[in-house]
Length: 119
Image 1 (cartoon, helix red, strand yellow):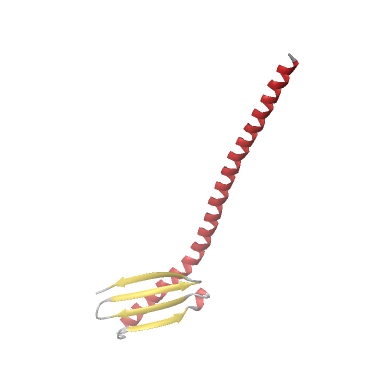
Image 2 (tube, helix red, strand yellow):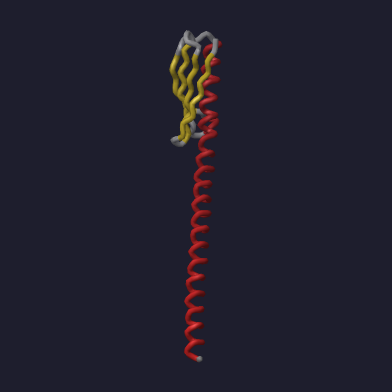
């Protein structure tokens, strides 16, 4: 009888250990999934912080080209540094005959383009 009792206790102990390993494995998978999601969100928000100045630089370049067109300046191609947007740069081209302005804003390696068509 004592032998049967020890065998049942041993089986219960093995079952408890296997169940604990299973629960810990599930918890590990959930933790790793949440960590991966968190890291990708942090990277995404850092990218968005760089996107906004690049877009504003492109917008500024397009506005500059429209100003030049308003002054009846012939078609042109210019690159310039924007002082108000720290390290942002802008490359702008305009063709008055085709009615097109193209502007690219660059900020810390991120590029955003804006195109304007006019008559």
